[in-house]
Image (tube, rainbow, N blue to C red; front, side):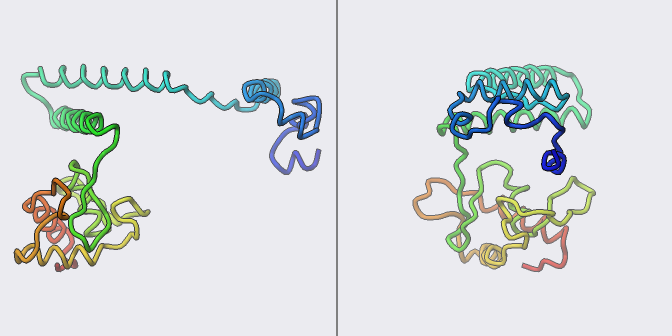
Length: 213
């Protein structure tokens, strides 16, 4: 039909062709598995792409377990090398960081706890990857490898939701340099090290001279 062609569907891909009826009450009463099976069967006959079935929780758990095992084996192989190339060393570092983060999540009921730097900004940072995340937050740029220029963010991120540098944190960093404030919130139980925060701030200033905090 014309409406089917306008939607990009070929003739024959209709409710009646799939379910032998157009009655919504009958169609809505069809079990989900049967509904999807009939739709996929019709798509196959018409040579349309068939959506992949959503994996079950057990299948996802098996995939994660396989990924963990593969990652561990790769880390063991790289660790055993007498010498490693730059790429291999980076790969090993990435695996080790992922393993630490996974262990940290498992120890905290699958969640990654985050910590605010100060009360004046609601953005909170996990323990890991502070350099990358705080660099984004203070500069609205992506932190690049050594020797590469940082690039402006193309879209908002968790750590830079407005796509603009956080002026509240820029002012706070200046206070931190002058040792007028401390890092973290009272009662948080943990805070990012002051030196780590100042190291990122110095990197931002060096990479982006227009930022003068």
